[in-house]
Length: 305
Image (cartoon, rainbow, N blue to C red; front, side, top):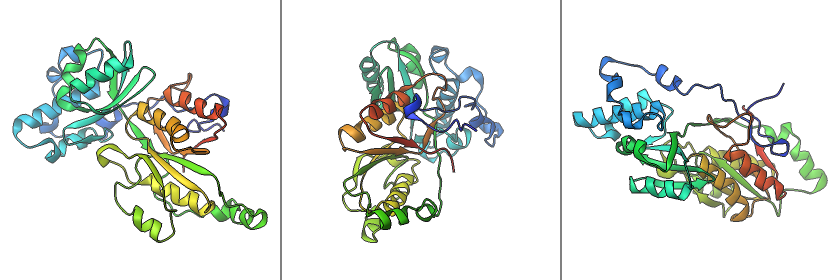
């Protein structure tokens, strides 16, 4: 059976399901009377260009801010919108430009956005929640939504080396990955700490190249480093490079390309799905995957546990 999570770059790019409703983040939360946001609090200027859940999050933030506590101390935001990647008073978004992406990028920076990245007509950024209402007035913006993403592996104890008989291959053919650099894309590399200890214990090689870590380390579990540990078990001669895939789709797409053009990766692997990835056409991530595979770099992706 075809697994919609499998990205087969050689057969037309990344594939991902589009049936997931973003509003499930709201339906799954524990609501109370104090947490309800009245529709009237969503500013009309934002309607049409701004995803409803993003406007709702901004409305909740505005209500919390008026009551006094800082956003970082207001758990209501994460309870109401558990899948949005928020830190302090900001949220990671993916925005589609109505014209040139750099124009939209600059407009978002003028609104206080940081960690911006462009790929095609897409701009990813960390945006202040207080600036959401102003988005509807931007002529450079076609549409903006929260950058929903999830990892596809989780915490596991791998027996993959024995299961796929790579231990036999190393012994029988005298190969260990020497001369190959593997590029890894996941949530984070060392946001939770421990990378230096992994090198000291021999679980990772020295000199891991980190092109880009998750911005502000808000939700990363260092799953990228865990993936590298598995790779290093199987091929202890490889060198490794990392780029976060958790700072929006444009950042992810650029990371795919930069792992090859900047870090010199010979193989790329990721375990991230963005819920907005299109199924019946090539989105930004599929286009980036096609670019690197056309250059002869295999691109592999997790299909789930």
